[in-house]
Image (cartoon, rainbow over all chains, first blue to last red; front, side):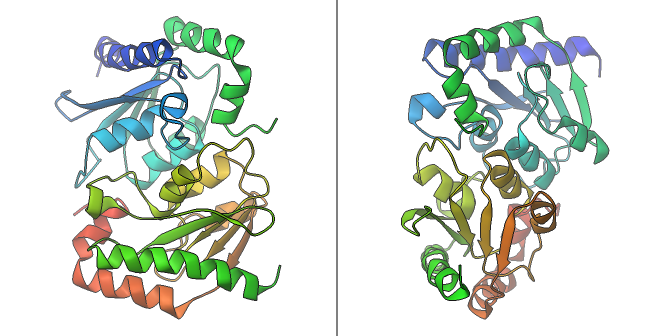
Length: 151
Length: 151
């Protein structure tokens, strides 16, 4: 698949990230697409909004997509490289294509996914980097909490 | 800490697993305890009950424990060795002690946790094995769905 297709998918995740930022939350969004490129579900980090540390962008999209018998042909798109928690989700459920908006702010587990044979497309999006940088500069303690960095 | 203490913690997770089974769900439970051994939260797999694939025992307990500034001194107890999704959760948030009821049915990521320096105590509980074996025999397709094994 060409990058234009992936960029279009990323826009859905970016929209979620922006909604999250407007809500006062951590601006990370995600979306899942089926084999035909149809949107299954999108989601965003809701740690702040719902006081729920388990809701990362990827896990929110995953939950909203509902039960699936197979993830083999599903593409997970996220504005930021998945942390180990979300990397584990991708690994356990056998998602084979992951599109990340950027991995400069946070690398997460993308190298390990590549080693496992997962296709990881990194779009190195300035929009994604700027959105998150804005939040981290304003609320570094919430960002650190979200990635499990001790105070 | 001696195993009697861990066995007592495991009982909380087993109670959750039994509730899950009675609800028609996958009987896997978990519980989180603070440094003084005080229960923070318990949870159970709710894939079937809530049609939510994101709720494993560990992620349910994690969510119910609410936002924590540090997981360094928290013990995660689960009736079954954590899958890669829950292994990733433990890794990302820096939980350093994990007690598993058993790892024969499913090994998950406990070896990788040990390599990362996490203390993993395996109580090899027959109760935990029997609870899950009962479910898997009755509904193998739901079990496979829960661990991402394609049909």
